Image (tube, rainbow over all chains, first blue to last red; front, side, top):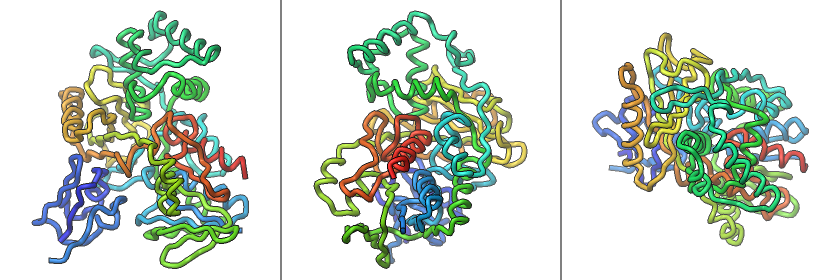
Amino acid sequence: MITIANYCVGCAFCKLVCPEEAIDVFGKATIDREKCVECKKCVAYCPLEAIKVVEG
Amino acid sequence: MRAAVIGAGLGGLLSANFLAEKGFKVDIYEKLPFYGGRFTNISYRGFQLSTGALHMIPHGNRGPLAQLLRKLNADVEIVDSKPEGEALYGGERLIIRKRNFPLRSKLKFFKWYFKNRIAGNDVSLKEFEAELDDFTRKFLRAFLGWSLSITTEDISFSHILPIYRHTIKHRGPGIPVGGCKGVVDALVENIKSYDGSIHLRTKVKGISKEGDRLCLITKEKNYYDIVFSNIGHLGTAKLLRDREYENRVSNLEPSSGIKYTIAIDEPFIGHTGVLFTLDTERISGMNEVTNADPNLAPNGKHLLMAHQPVITNNLRYEISLGLKDIKELLKGYNYEILAIQSYSGEWPVNRVRTGMDIGNETPYENLYVVGDGAKGDDIEVDGIALGVMRVISKL
């Protein structure tokens, strides 16, 4: 499962690179788990390492 | 001689290009999967969205960045804005030129200008703006918000003077063809031609001083004669685990801003300059970069950007005010907001707010900080270019 930490500043790089349009950003990023396929592209593009993969 | 650059943003790439040209073997380390930092593009639904900056160079072809790019033979085309700026005031559009500002306010400016030059007197911009007429005051606020992501409360009169002087000397903005990515691509091409290496997805975990050299710790250890850090003073101090340095720079405040990227069918601005918005609550200004480079949007579409500073610490509230302004400004237009991007804290507009810069030096003589954490006295990327030049001229 992909999680977004509270210290996300909302730069939206994750939204721009998400191939599934599963991320919305309004001050902070939020993720639509129905759409997310866990490709982890957002994890790589987050400059603050605020997006993490959590098992389970 | 080996040189390393930490962070492949604009300041890092400019420095790397200089070092490579001077004969250093350069390694650039970048933790993200792309170079350019907050000065490049990400393609989104056929639009070239900037990662940070507004696809604009504050002083166009005449400013410090353009001069530096020419010096480095970087192949960048910049379209100078024409008009440079317009103000939307009382529902009317006015070209920004000296004669549109009332004489009374111009005299107030020169009063403080000479008081500062002769007697060294300073005044907060908050006090200064109280002496101005409504148009000039609102323009000053819009200019600060658009260019520096600050308000009149954040800066004193004396700190705005260098920016005023640069703007009089180098004048208004320009739009690089290809957007921000057009600039960083040209720099990377140059760096590669000198056999420099860019290591993407490679995080620097620490720096240690070993003899005369600096050791950069990634997955391996590499030794360098000189290191340029493009991650700000605080980030650099943390990599060094140098508490004294960290304490000294921990009070440097960043500037925060919000950028709205808008797809619009018909041009709203219709030219290549900035539209400063004076009737709004938060939005400071807008630009429409497709008037300079249509390839930044799909065929028949325009790319409009709006920017605001963050004034309260409630980001969602700030965005709601910005969106309200945009709705009012674009009434009757067919548009879609593609992205709302906010920048603060450790990923801000500027790591050090204008007026607070402490220079490029660190406690280590072969380690310099460049980029938005150590700018010269100019706006955004032109300030970054000045900062890089300041260091290079010392080598």
